[in-house]
Image 1 (cartoon, rainbow, N blue to C red):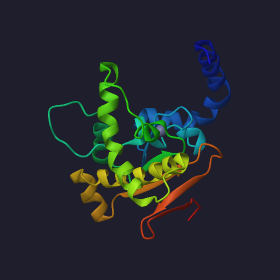
Image 2 (image 1 turned 135 degrees about the vertical axis):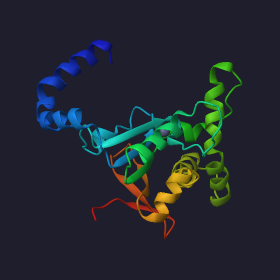
Image 3 (image 1 turned 90 degrees about the vertical axis):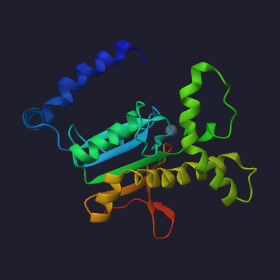
Image 4 (image 1 turned 180 degrees about the vertical axis):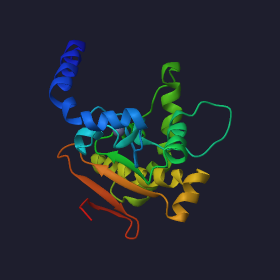
Amino acid sequence: MLINDLIKGNKKFREARFPKYEGDIKELVEKGQKPEILFAGCSDSRVTPDSMLDTKPGDMFILRNVGNFVPPYNPDDDYHGSSAAIEYAVSVLEVKHIIVCGHSHCGACKSLYQNLNDSPNLIHVKKWLELGKRAKEYTLLAIQDKSDKEKLYRATERISIVHQMENLLTFPEVERKVKNGELQIHGWYYRIEDGTIEYYDGEECSFKPLKEN
Ligand code: ZN
């Protein structure tokens, strides 16, 4: 994919798809955005929220980072990009749903099992991946047969989603709104090989095929 392909793509978008959104865009510009959903997914290029969910401009506030990790609430003087997006979505946009969406073949989850070198060029990656450590430890305890690495990675990807959902609740405003029934947290798992999505059933502690309510 070349930059020129992106330029051509934008032209195609403006000619073919943009006119379909024109009414919505006018309102979104005049009144501002009011999405009801915060989608927190991985930066992986194979995870494409708007395509895979057939959403349009204004539908979802999107946070993407390496591994779709959610850092725990930590009010200090550092720069917390992902936490800022969560706070903004919850306290300013007042979203009604947060979807933590993991995916199959996630490089971040796989790298939890590899030794990253101590290169200063990966200092932030290494620190960030600590957010998946608990998922790895839990997976190693839960899975008896550890010889099948791919099975181990798939389990880690799913378990990590649950842990990131727990981290969301460390944000006081998220916890308050969830308790009051103003906000719902969903755990989704996107299978990049076939485009299907599973959801986390908290009562049965398992992932199931997503279906309409
Ligand atoms: Zn990923």
